[in-house]
Picture (tube, one colour):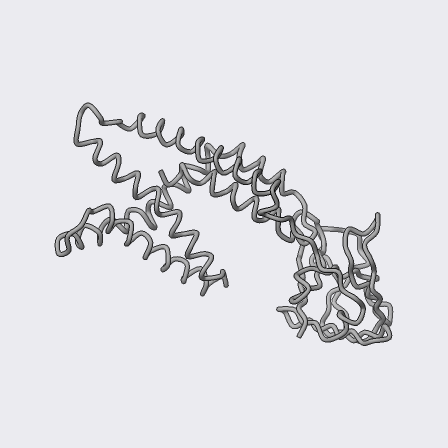
Length: 284
């Protein structure tokens, strides 16, 4: 059952990604096609992993709990699976900086169907007439997986067409709104002054090399330069900050505008558009 829900969960993730800011990266549809093509290989493995880290470990304290507290075993199994989901979410938040609330909600939700499936098949196995067997379990899981995928796909199409889920639109900022100090996670600093003057520290810019696979695919520059607001056009997919560094360091670089009007970002995807080095600056 853990594997049965993964295609639908993957589709939800894909819709969330494609309706958000892709930061100029491509290959989303191709990546989804590859995932679907190789699903028979990765689905059982991920389903087994999910069972080993959440569904099965939660069954042990659930059985211990019902010895002391009344109630159906599946209820306590569900509660302990939810608790484990929160624990793994906390681990992911500490190790990789994932948002705790959203990650916990996803992991708790992923623990519901496997627990209910375990309870159903365990109850069915007690009756020879209702027992599914190994092959029957796989057939039921495959059918459920298909139904979930169809329901989620239909819901995603309906939500997109009706405007419930809106596609991302970058903010349209003025030159005055762009002035200020912008910083990156790796110590990059870009100060944009009124009048078109720029100061930069450890800031990556477009490299003179056209090799996407160069390491790194950018040139780090410091000093001063000039900037201008570049509006969206047929050649440029969104507004951005055109930066030219003095002293001949790197090439003119377009830092595209992302984020929201209240919390804007400047970003550049260096190198391969499908798997490049994404640099994001946020304003102080």
